[in-house]
Image (cartoon, rainbow, N blue to C red):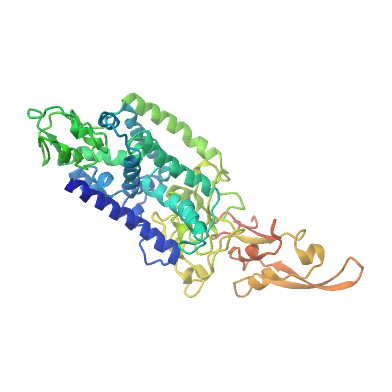
Amino acid sequence: MRLTRTRAIAQTFFLALFLWLLYKADFSRMESYPVSLFLEIDPLLALGTALATHTLYAGMLLSLLVLIPTIFLGRFFCGWVCPFGALHTFFSRLFRPLKRAEQVEADRYRPIYALKYYILAAFLILAAFGVTQVGLLDPMALLTRSMATAVFPAVGAATGGRILGTWTFHLAWLLGGILILLLLLNAVLPRFFCRVLCPLGALLGVFSRFSLFRVHKNSEKCNECEQCLVNCHGAADPHGTLRKSECYVCLECRGSCPTGVITFQVLPPEEEVRVAPEVSRRRLLQTGAVTLAAVPLLGASVRPDRRPPPDLIRPPGSREESRFLGSCIKCGACMLVCPTNVIQPLMFQAGLEALWTPVMDYQLGYCEHNCTLCTEVCPTGAIRELSVEEKMGEDPYETPISLGTAFLDRSRCLPWAMYKPCIVCEEVCPVSPKAIYIEEAEGLDAEGHRVALQRPVVEPARCIGCGLCEYKCPVYDKRAIRVSSVGESRSPTNVLLLE
């Protein structure tokens, strides 16, 4: 029982640390907190982005803090550290059957638990062809995304912004619903996500086959009471042939064994243990074939040059689109720290490959001129870190970072189309000299009287695509001035005029 309490305290601590880091990032907007810590120690995210981009981001070297101990201790991360695993442990306890016989059956190994290894294989094959999708089911990315775009906004709305900011995100109900569904699945099987779906757990299970320490049962003294099966978090079958790749090193079996025949040893005898994951070679080949067929299908849903549509604008510091899609793990950390709520999760406008990647929505906010928070929290370098001086084009940098170019729709602009006075876009333009200037003109009102007009005109060479003009435009339903991704600094081909 003492060991159980110790593990529960450890899980609670890491879950609280995870939530505290996200809270400080969301509420205080302070970049000094390591918001991406749990993302950077995730070996699956490091491996997936390294395969896709052939580059290992320096921060992801922290993943060795998890990977190396796994080689010695086994899947300790799943049983002691993982904050998402801690949530599933709590809900598994909440939905736990009352009868002991049902508890024993719930914690036996089932063939469906091999599914996570096929999911892992599919993600790694996709990454090898430059398609990074590991963030869809990776527990650290999934939990960060869910908290940033659904849970925290819901708490903020419920408390009127007193605890968390009152931000809104596209389809937050869907992202939150996925999290709730995964937690409710613990009523079907304990730690359902961890046992069945988690690709990070599968990767750690593969490496745990080399672990020097593991649980060992003295079969000669075992009375076959199966008490060790109760509360076996990984369904590793410690009562029979231990499945090394499924063991979370929770040591519940050791604590619950009434005869003390289960121990945790270094290099124990290899009898009655399955070292490798129980997967079918045929199923792996089938998974590989289906995944390879999916690679061109994912790419066929976007433009041939893999650029997003013109109205989809990436955050400042984003890499060129193909590199961006290969690096982005869809974690939502950039959305969490954005002080204006302009960074939103993308749905299917740029194809399945870009699902839940960050995009700017100038209807909801704008890019603060001297803010670089989103560039400081990206764990994989999909958004490279910028200084304020580089973003604004101050010395020693010659030109500012451009996100796109604003275009004026004269058919909707008040002074152009309706002879109504309005120069809001020119007034709020933050660059100097301004990218929007005023053209003096005359027009006729509805009664035929001549009126003096000030008509805004965009100078594209000065525009940085920050979106402040679009956000502040008083024509609310469809803004009279809108930003396109053309002219963005990250792409030498997405230019305004063809040469």
